[in-house]
Amino acid sequence: MRAAVLHDHGEPLEIESVDAPEPDPDGVVVDVEACGICRSDWHGWQGDWDWLGIQPQEGQILGHEPAGTVVSAGADVEWVREGDRVAVPFNLGDGSCHQCRNGRSNICENVRPLGFVESAQGAFAEQVHVPAADHNAVSLPEGVSATDMAGLGCRFMTSFHGLAHRANVSAGDWVAVHGCGGVGLSAVHIADALGANVIAVDLVDEKLATAEGLGAVETVNAGEVEDVPREVKAIMDGGANVAVDALGIAETCRNSVMSLGRRGKHVQIGLSTSDERGQVSLPTDLMVMNEIEFIGSLGMQPTRYDEIFRMVATGKLDPGAVVSGTVSLDDVPEKLAAMSDYGTEGIPVIDSF
Image (cartoon, rainbow, N blue to C red; front, side, top):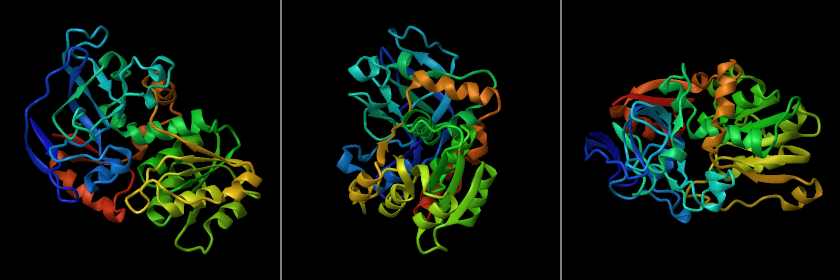
């Protein structure tokens, strides 16, 4: 099969022929119909995250936002069948650890991050293997396209989990989203659907315009103001109820925390780069005095995907709205390179392999 393979960090991925996967006894093989290209793939391509133990090595197939059709299943798979159309979470759980058994499989004790480790080759390929398929493969509802489902990949799911489950965003809350890439635009759209008033912050006017189209009631161009938190607080007197760092650099993380009002909640979705290596200094005294919460959010449990599907069915959420366009597998190296200068908008999706 054809796949985009990593050979050297920072060097273009090679499109080449590799062996197609075979299913483990508890796994399935999925014909990939669509796969999002995510900034997390860019991190892996750059060689980030060795401090987390998930730095992709030579021979790794990246790609972690797939949807497609099951073409083969292992002997121990009970519920997933050949011909099923499925989505696949990026943080593959084993389905049996304490966290998985208690409904928190997004933080599985034996998690395998799809596309980042050798044992979980990714979906920038014609086919992808899904272990523990009865747990990880999520059936797609009728009418949800593979492209839209790829748009629902890690960025949309992580934003939904962070806002709806971790921060408990509700009607009338003011939510400031710092960074309007794929995950940030997803957060804008989701917060709006949950009834919040959204302030979008970015350096690029085109991305801010897209955020407005997805429901932002106010925008701040961070390159045109001296003090981003002050601008946010001027819009919402006293500060935001919830703020999201959707990028993962030190500046956006601190701006997010400092744009909150009393008892505000900061949601960290963006993971850091090699500049931060997972370490960001924070205004801890301010956080204590204002009782600010710092909340991490990773992925979303497959058992809760139906919450999003129900909102899609009624038109409250439209994952396709954050898909910026479709590309072929051959375009992946160029799309990843463009992310180095933040040269992509929304979520590009591969639909031709």
